[in-house]
Length: 106
Image 1 (cartoon, rainbow, N blue to C red):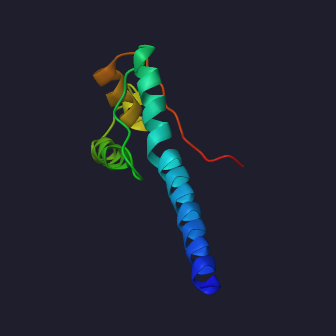
Image 2: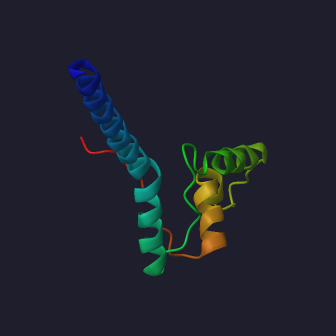
């Protein structure tokens, strides 16, 4: 009987530790960035919505590939060529652009 009670307590402890670690992971990876996004939108800073893992990487690589595929003249503006993604974001969301990076604590 003592062994069953001890194993039940151990199982409850392990499940609670796992649940706490899972919540911390979800909080850092999804909940905290979404709260930050909502806070920034309330302050008037617009931008694309937070997307898990890769974010805007696909759009950024497509914009870079498109910008590099076209020839450039000496009289052309260099910013759309060097920073095509930033240039498209400014055109889409206006001049107030804010980039944020969510990192875990050291």
